Image (cartoon, rainbow, N blue to C red; front, side, top):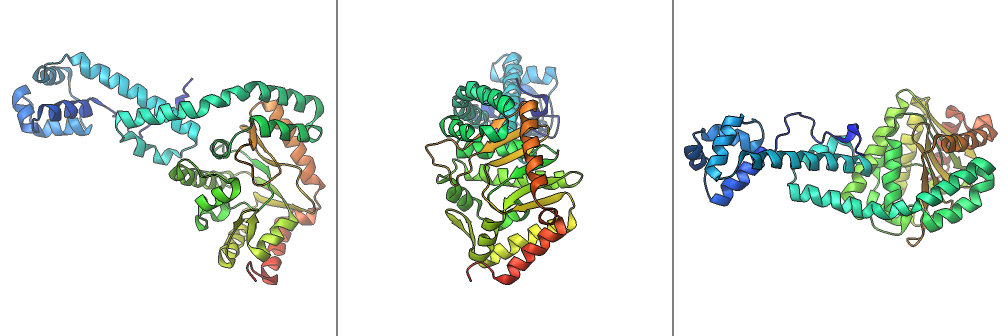
Length: 370
């Protein structure tokens, strides 16, 4: 089912598609606007506005245009109906892909052939995911019966067999992040979102997952949407992240952010400064540091579900790396697990000012690359 939120590809409500059809027929005949105007009794200036989509012709004018082309007025009416249906499907597709709404108007100007190709490509890309439904249900039953902690090892096995690949994981993460409610996360390295503009996101993606994204521009949109969503959460909610202290310290010392991703000293410094700035200026942005190895990676939103991610980094391209759970009961189970984990961290290691002080002391001790 197409959600109502995804029905409007354009911000304006005019959205008529008769104009492009008129232009296509006129150019096929080899006529100028003046030629067409002479044949149907409509000024070339008005025909130009119709073709651009800034004016909607009355039925009588449409009938005159149809007569000039020797087609029925129903030809244009059916074209309009088909084009609007396609735009609605494309809007739903963009919503599912996690593409920011601020960019949707760019797709509205594509040809119907291009719009249809995007919709069909997405259908082909997502069809295989339906095979995981049964395994997701079984995993949720196990989680609710045995609890998150007792289920982690088997969840990792399920993820590797049936989980999301890196590109689909990035898409699902963007969808999840766009919810405006409180977020909670367990991550094995310092989140780049506070300073996302500093990083070559293609390098980050390839170094993290060992594969290239199919559409680098889509990756850029996803990252922009995720950062925007984070800041929106912080306007009135909380974002709590649990990190292992050791890898954060190593990152500051060496620039090693992941197994196959490293950054220079200046980038690390700016990344930490932006993170510290959020800690000191946004009470809702909270970090908990603990000494040990994380049992899993996790991202959750109270009203939108959770994504369970394997603890290993990076994922093998041949294996899945994440599962998204949407059932409220399952989300609550992961949230309860996170809350217990969070409360187990000493207060000094999850107080904004103390965490910011520690990050600053680590920076003072030595930048990456030294």
